[in-house]
Amino acid sequence: MNNKRSIAFTVELLGLFILLILVIVMITQVFVMSRARTIEARHLTQAVMMAQSTAEAASSEHDLSLLAEKVKDMDNVQSAEADASDGSLSIVFDTDGKQAGKDFCIVLHRTEEERDSGVYTRDNIEVYYCVPGQTEGKIYDLSTGSHFTAEEVGS
Image (cartoon, rainbow, N blue to C red; front, top):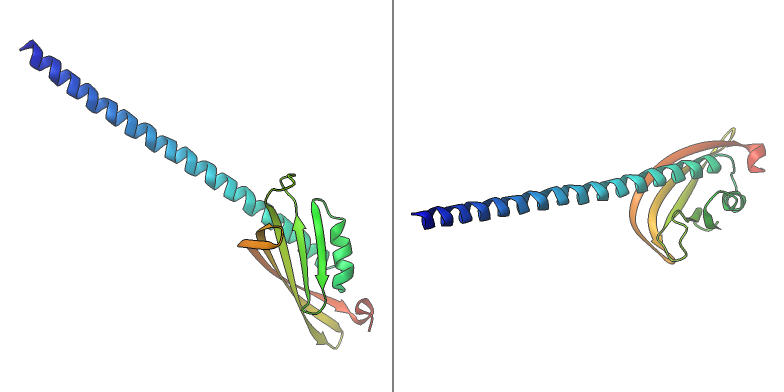
């Protein structure tokens, strides 16, 4: 009779041990998922701030090549290249400080509309993860517009 109690106690102890392991695994998964969401939120926040900074700089300059020179003076900008043929500006931001780390690439596409009082520009700013030479998934997209007078445009 004492042997039956011992076996029942051992089975119950084993069941409780398995239940404890399952609870620990679930709690660990919650913490890992929380960490991943925190990193994702940090990257989104950085992308929004970089897109806003780019939009502010773009609203101050009509000429994309001059805008590229202004953007190069911004913090953490590795490179900025304007392509006048398709009206775009490519910017690479370094946010982690590592030589081979993932960076953020910003692509600004500009379209212009002539108006009586000057030129209205629409800028579509897209933020991507990037490795030199290739962009990965889009993180954030911002559309904005600016009006430049004929004197600012130079016509």
